[in-house]
Image 1 (cartoon, one colour):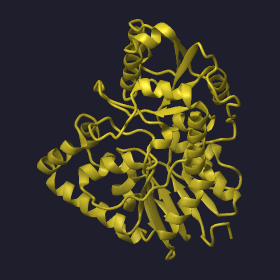
Image 2 (image 1 turned 30 degrees about the vertical axis):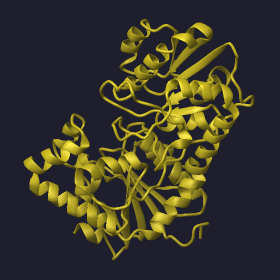
Image 3 (image 1 turned 90 degrees about the horizontal axis):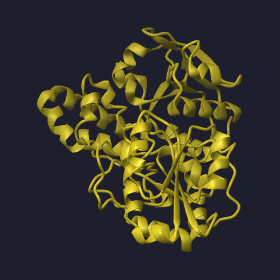
Image 4 (image 1 turned 135 degrees about the vertical axis):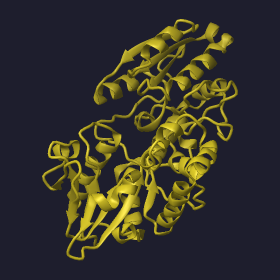
Length: 395
């Protein structure tokens, strides 16, 4: 019996040959739970990412496209809700096995991906408008999913990694329930902390972006640049260096825009995890980031602004939040008028000079308290025990 009581087994389902955040998450959790003494399975391709990276203590059930997986043992099945409308074809329960299902939403579009055509459409319109289009063009499908989701929530069979994941689906389907969260953990094994909690050099400020240069991220980077560029007096008095750590399909576009700025911008490209950690500790005063990049920076005791994402230009009056000011485990919300961000770029940089140590410690403590592996495991077991959704629901 493990630390969190008697649970017969836990099974992760996410067959994938790709490398991504969700795949890493399931591997790390499977290895952790098996190491704690829980019987743990993954269902994956013979050459899948999970199969290749699980420890010897984790059992692997082979999966191939188009097959139905037979489960003849009691277990708690953990999987993303992209499989909601395929449960009957994916799994066959044998020998009266008791199989509970806990869906873990790890991306805002996980549920919409079940509905043909609407995943792509949902990226083009606001969530609040998507409900109207959905109800007009696919009314029966809309009602079906709304009822199903409400029932799954009643049975405590779905959790979200953060508030934006819930917000997207609640705006579309009007679920009308209090969300349940299981926050994602970060890998802290390679992360060192900054020792001197102050500006590296009083005559300059070294600002960093950490993360992929993707479509939904570059508008936030450009917004930060424009805000810094507007601080004419500061730029005359203090040197600003902006370090772009990461790469992506929009790098050339950012390089073009960077030439219009009145401060120095350097592109560092991609680095391995250890090199990134060393670089930000030794060269960066403050990080602007989204997702786990923000968590990793904060855990390194580098003051971290948690940015929001947008596919279009961001309004001039957009403001900022320190990571520790986030609610609902959010790692970045869609930019909207509902954002409760409070700090101008001028205030962010002033606070950095006057309260560096306090901000660094708050960012670190927030991350440790909410996104450590031990915290995620604790909350996950709580939700597993509460879950009442079984495979019978999908028959």
